[in-house]
Image (tube, rainbow, N blue to C red; front, side, top):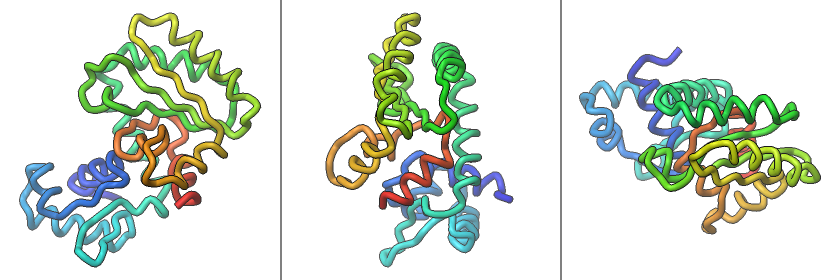
Length: 197
């Protein structure tokens, strides 16, 4: 079970999957005393939530603890959606209309940081590439009912793996790594990252 401080630390790490942090930076970000953050991070490293490299920089260990990472993501989502009623309505409509058992649904891009952006970027990753166009039409129809502009992107798992293989390239999936909010399928998202990297 994570302490409150460990949970806050993990929120930072799951929101920036590719980024490396120093303990000092995490401490400053949380506005918490360095010794408390240091102790908390040590426990997170011991439990393999966080990895430490040779230069003592810390990063998220996305290869393990997928159910715990999914839980942290679900609490981030809940916190974000409490102040975003339009997005909540959009999500409810999408979840009602998508008739798939396995998929990943996330919001990414500038709206996650500022909440006042031109559009809201949506990514849905599905197993069956033959259904990409069908799901895209459904989501675009839902998006057309809102005054807010939604930029809808639907890709197959196969395409997601291709994009993740190109780490240094700018593409939709790589963009989600450091600026995302997982709506549905968080465990699958982390499994996808683990298998791709």
